[in-house]
Image (cartoon, rainbow, N blue to C red; front, side):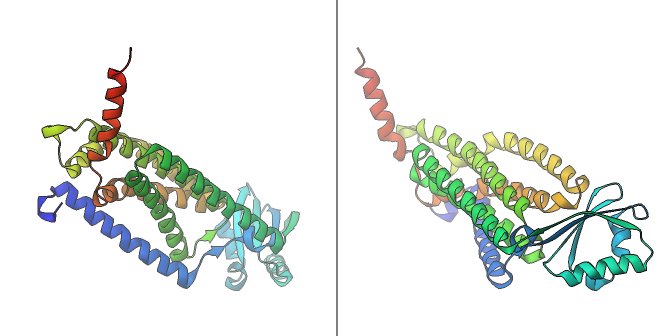
Length: 306
């Protein structure tokens, strides 16, 4: 297979694969330099619920506090006149925001205060990573059984690509990485795998029907497979993105990180199912010859039936 023999669609897929490689390398570089901004779920800290009748929005509440105190707080709205303040395990910060609200004449009532120790946070992070690792292992076993190894490798690489890009974005923008974001990574794994399997199944189906002089170049078969599944993929992704956008815009700060991670994961997952999961097997030498023996065995078994 040479560059000159590829169609425009095939060349676009290969260029997309190169772009994905560049993005993955950039994301790994950002992660190694900046790391992730772990939230209180992992680092530990105080969670305080307060209610106040004189403040109606997060913007109004932050306006009553000094920038130094606001930078140490994560404020979310839990209802009308009900706010949740998250902070690092520093009692001085607690005293500061309470003193500043009192100085501003804000009447507030502390409904509850809880403390999450760093040891609990470490355990949560460890258990979350184990869940992520277990999901990846189960998926690899499933792909190894279901697909020829080239298609399986393409799906796994596409899956890792999606996770790395989402983590790289969170590191680049300094977004908080908490348990809800970790849960969204598990959802991204399932969604990305679904897209890759749909395309891979169609590629396998078209390759199996190629025989003799009727065989078509693999890159043309893959283009046909993508074209036949593209409408379904775009409709599914579009409706899912619309739902996630509503969560992002309307669900409040508590689910913002979850929505951002899932939104980006679905976008890059749709991209990777075309440019990685379908293109990488082509570069690894996938052809209809990989399925010829399987078809011959099935045909012979059918002939030998009494």
